[in-house]
Image 1 (cartoon, rainbow, N blue to C red):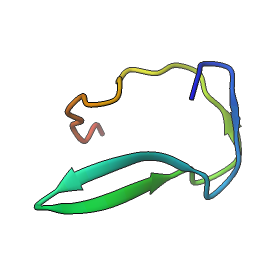
Image 2 (image 1 turned 120 degrees about the horizontal axis):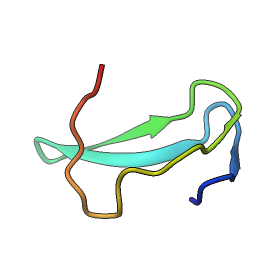
Image 3 (image 1 turned 45 degrees about the horizontal axis):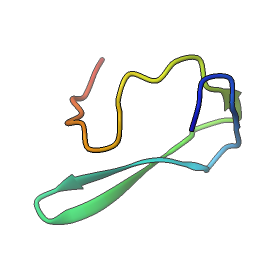
Amino acid sequence: MEEGEPVEAGQPLAVVEAMKMENILRAEKSAVVKSLNAKPGDSLALMR
């Protein structure tokens, strides 16, 4: 995935591993990627 790339509602965006399980994060709505703040293998934190 790259900046400026369109995504469709329901499209997988990232796979998060937690407690030996994989959770797929999907786009809630159609949009365009504005920026990427993580690379493959990075640890992600919930941001509010």
